[in-house]
Image 1 (spheres, one colour):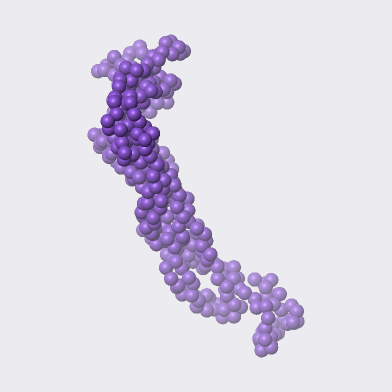
Image 2 (cartoon, one colour):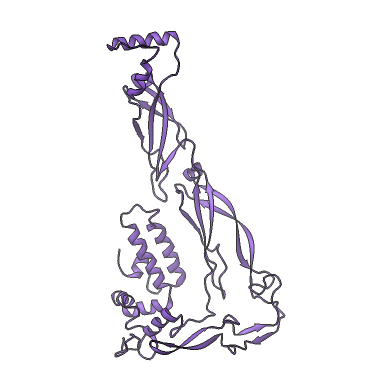
Amino acid sequence: MSEDFYDVLGVSRDADEDEIKRAYRKKAAEYHPDVSDEPDAEEKFKKVKKAKEVLSDDEKRQAYDQMGHDRFEQAEKRGGFDGGAGGAGGAGRGNPFGGGGGGMGGMGDIFNEFFGGGGGRRNPNRPRQGSNLRTGMEIDLEEAYEGAQKQITVRRPERCDACDGEGHPPGADVNTCSQCNGQGQVTQVQQTPFGRVQQTQTCPRCNGDGQQYSETCDQCGGDGIVQREAKLKVDVPAGIADGQTLQMEREGAPGENGGPKGDLLIEVSVREHPDFERDGSDLFYRTALSFPQVVFGDTIEVPTLAGSVEMDVPQGTQSGETFRLRGKGMPHLRRRGDGDLFVKVQVVTPDSLNEEQREALKEFAEAGGEEVNVEKGFFERIKSSF
């Protein structure tokens, strides 16, 4: 896998934010350690995640494009961007913080890390994607085998219809915020080891709007958001395993300032099955056989999640022996083929016999040179032999 973040996600250098997010979701689903069988899947997943984090951040992406992959990685290890968003001269010579030309550059990144502000701040009114939400869902093993469409009910935040998410009635009077004078930001000065640092933050009174309203919405209390129950149909892919997560795009919390909704993450729990045990894509089943069946051999019917199949039991099969039925297990998630079904046989010794059975087994024992008391010990010896 290439180290270049654009190559890691498989997008062009002029890809927009939506393209990057779509590419990330595709790659993350491919390399997630819970899904992928590749030996280096975890390392690839980390690269994909890092690429998305950098290319989704406007400031980091600008620095990455200007500096290149290696210099960017080195700058991050030092805690700032050496030669960040500067002028034509690249890195600001003599600047200990690595800032470019006439701007804060890397120095602003250091201040952001320590103080949450500084140079290179973002517009508080920019569109922001909503938060991801999480919920859970239970399914049967048969549904995990075949795939299913399930309906779930989730309680989630949604845009208030009464005020269209504005937080105030349409006719409310609007006034300039008295704390920030309509700027949406307030400035504070802090004394730091670097000297006096001017820090700009979103105005806490108007939340960056620069305005305040004479009334608030009765339905949402001014938040613009209300809690509602939503019924959603979920497509469960065949082969999903217990503990894995499904992602429903744009079914999470609403965004801010016109931003898109977040996603809904659904953790799947697969109920235990009365007959089968599961390990990845393989299934395990136990079946009981009689003494004559394992001695003489037999053909038996074995249940699978797709219906019964026939299995040959060879002569002389021992109790505890396991047989493998290829392709009769669970489907591989998002890959071709199925796992296997492993059938373990156990010989069942009868608790009581009729007279004819006793005589037959006594003759069997004597033919083998055994002198046994059929009434007391023969079947105990059969049990112990298995």
